[in-house]
Image (cartoon, rainbow, N blue to C red):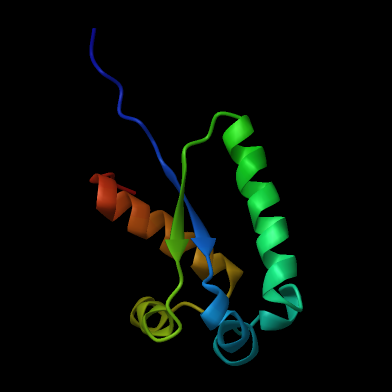
Length: 100
Protein backbone atom coordinates (compact mmCIF):
# COMPACT_ATOMS: atom_id res chain seq x y z
CA UNK A 1 0.00 0.00 0.00
CA UNK A 2 1.38 3.40 -0.99
CA UNK A 3 2.09 5.82 1.81
CA UNK A 4 -0.01 8.95 1.50
CA UNK A 5 1.75 12.25 2.13
CA UNK A 6 0.77 14.08 5.27
CA UNK A 7 -0.46 17.61 4.64
CA UNK A 8 0.49 20.17 7.23
CA UNK A 9 -1.23 23.53 7.39
CA UNK A 10 0.51 26.75 8.29
CA UNK A 11 -0.98 29.28 10.67
CA UNK A 12 0.33 32.84 10.72
CA UNK A 13 1.68 33.58 14.18
CA UNK A 14 3.04 36.71 15.80
CA UNK A 15 5.70 37.27 18.44
CA UNK A 16 4.71 39.45 21.36
CA UNK A 17 7.56 41.87 20.66
CA UNK A 18 6.46 42.31 17.01
CA UNK A 19 2.70 42.53 17.48
CA UNK A 20 2.22 46.29 17.89
CA UNK A 21 4.56 47.10 15.02
CA UNK A 22 2.88 44.58 12.73
CA UNK A 23 -0.60 45.75 13.68
CA UNK A 24 0.08 49.49 13.56
CA UNK A 25 2.78 49.92 10.91
CA UNK A 26 3.17 46.85 8.70
CA UNK A 27 -0.22 45.28 7.99
CA UNK A 28 -2.60 47.16 5.71
CA UNK A 29 -5.47 45.61 7.67
CA UNK A 30 -3.98 45.95 11.15
CA UNK A 31 -7.16 47.61 12.36
CA UNK A 32 -9.01 44.28 12.10
CA UNK A 33 -6.63 42.57 14.52
CA UNK A 34 -7.18 42.49 18.27
CA UNK A 35 -6.09 45.62 20.14
CA UNK A 36 -3.57 43.75 22.29
CA UNK A 37 -1.26 40.80 21.88
CA UNK A 38 -2.92 39.05 24.84
CA UNK A 39 -6.33 39.24 23.13
CA UNK A 40 -4.91 38.07 19.82
CA UNK A 41 -2.96 35.23 21.46
CA UNK A 42 -6.04 33.92 23.27
CA UNK A 43 -8.08 33.93 20.04
CA UNK A 44 -5.24 32.38 18.03
CA UNK A 45 -4.71 29.59 20.57
CA UNK A 46 -8.45 28.84 20.51
CA UNK A 47 -8.41 28.70 16.70
CA UNK A 48 -5.33 26.50 16.67
CA UNK A 49 -6.89 24.14 19.23
CA UNK A 50 -10.12 23.96 17.25
CA UNK A 51 -8.29 23.04 14.05
CA UNK A 52 -6.19 20.42 15.82
CA UNK A 53 -9.28 18.92 17.47
CA UNK A 54 -10.71 18.51 13.96
CA UNK A 55 -7.65 16.47 13.00
CA UNK A 56 -5.64 19.15 11.19
CA UNK A 57 -1.86 19.22 11.51
CA UNK A 58 -0.91 22.84 12.14
CA UNK A 59 2.45 24.57 12.30
CA UNK A 60 2.92 28.11 13.51
CA UNK A 61 4.60 30.35 10.97
CA UNK A 62 6.01 33.48 12.56
CA UNK A 63 5.56 36.70 10.62
CA UNK A 64 8.70 38.83 10.61
CA UNK A 65 7.93 42.56 10.34
CA UNK A 66 10.90 43.16 8.03
CA UNK A 67 10.81 40.08 5.82
CA UNK A 68 7.06 39.64 5.32
CA UNK A 69 6.43 42.95 3.49
CA UNK A 70 9.32 42.13 1.15
CA UNK A 71 7.85 38.67 0.47
CA UNK A 72 4.53 40.33 -0.37
CA UNK A 73 6.13 42.98 -2.60
CA UNK A 74 7.96 40.38 -4.70
CA UNK A 75 4.61 38.63 -5.31
CA UNK A 76 2.57 41.78 -5.83
CA UNK A 77 0.43 41.09 -2.75
CA UNK A 78 -1.14 43.47 -0.29
CA UNK A 79 0.30 43.12 3.21
CA UNK A 80 -2.92 41.73 4.67
CA UNK A 81 -4.71 38.64 6.00
CA UNK A 82 -4.89 36.99 2.59
CA UNK A 83 -1.12 37.35 2.18
CA UNK A 84 -0.51 36.09 5.73
CA UNK A 85 -2.48 32.96 4.88
CA UNK A 86 -0.55 32.48 1.63
CA UNK A 87 2.76 33.07 3.40
CA UNK A 88 2.01 30.52 6.12
CA UNK A 89 1.03 27.93 3.49
CA UNK A 90 4.15 28.74 1.44
CA UNK A 91 6.56 28.39 4.38
CA UNK A 92 5.08 25.07 5.48
CA UNK A 93 5.04 23.74 1.92
CA UNK A 94 8.69 24.68 1.45
CA UNK A 95 9.65 23.11 4.77
CA UNK A 96 7.92 19.83 3.98
CA UNK A 97 8.62 19.66 0.26
CA UNK A 98 4.96 20.04 -0.63
CA UNK A 99 3.87 21.70 -3.81
CA UNK A 100 1.08 24.21 -4.29
